[in-house]
Length: 105
Image (cartoon, rainbow, N blue to C red; front, side, top):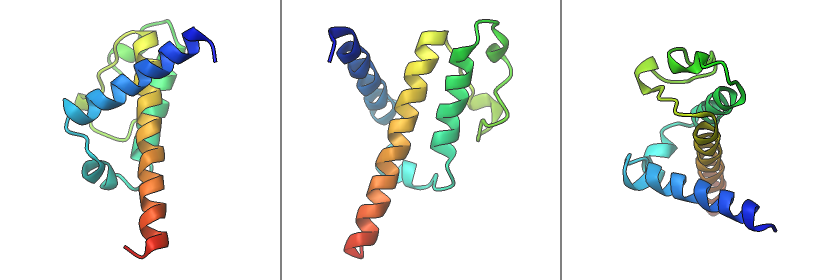
């Protein structure tokens, strides 16, 4: 793995930790979003990060699952990092759900 790839993965990890520690988006909170909202939010930020026109400043993509007030795009690169962290959150949620299903919890 290249140093640059590693650095980006560290940034995604830091963003995920920020979401948990500063925003309060814990495992319990994420569990409430069991209809794909985390993945949809990640997709929305990925879409925002894919355009350079600036449209994202005031209009979230149609896949945005929450109120427009929660739409807080930054710059292209930052939005892609946020997108990846939200996708990690969804994968973690799916893994917890699968683990609790397989253990009967």
